[in-house]
Image (tube, rainbow, N blue to C red):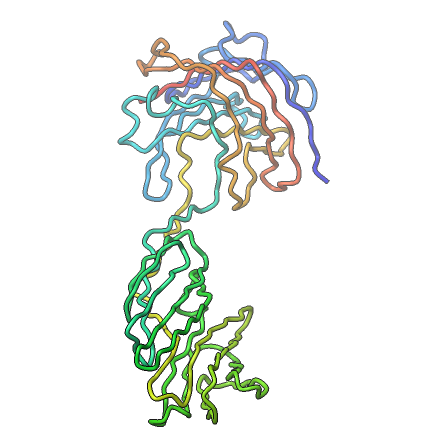
Length: 382
């Protein structure tokens, strides 16, 4: 069961550049003019407030894989006691080459999403397949590639979008000499058309076209052949099979191949004992496949809130590998230039709202709610 507690209140916060000044314990009533304040409840009423010299401020670039990402941080913390409670706000910008204009490059959006520790998958390239007819090339061959595209010819090369997981490719052949038209359709697994899709070749072993050899894709555990001759299907553990036909009726050969967690099918149509080959049978070669690039998700334009209470630390994202990048943490209502701080760093005033859960870093099922509809923050940047 999730444990949820509530955080409600008004937050006025100034996030500045690197500073290291002594301050009294927080909270305290003798800190001078209050510039930084959280007045609300965190599992009970609490006030965090501090003057300009009694606050931890930091801006830096943090390494995130191949990118050094701008980090702007401000936190209420007792610097003399690292075990004390604290409340921290962190905003990420872009890498070093994209932070020249913070207002335009970072704070130009309404919603700041949660940080996410998961990986980002990007797919480049496409499946490019070369289709070709088998024994008995015909005077006319038409292709329906299953994605709205068509083609003609004994061979055809087609490019599939990387978003497609499977297609059904239909081949229709017409042989003028034998005066026959035949069609075959095969389902193709595009997620891995090399290893997860069975197919087979057809080779006549006699000149009168009554005996045939079939050779299927290797790598499957079982091969069950139905030769279309009313004989019960044969299950083999090898990828080759042979058969003989004593008549000239059209035959549909169907193969079912299996391996761990996968079943794959392939078909061909032949007309045995004819004066000329009359087949609807094809295979394909894979010329190219999509490439999946996996990288750590970079926390561009995101916000992290961290709260520590009685030794337990909560953050605005779950401490796991799930994708949390679509969950809002901070909603920006207005961003405008603000006066420079004592170190001469430029600042921006941000106004908005916070409405999110904070999650225990050691137990994602333990969460507390944070909610503030009046939030004013000034962030410093290099």
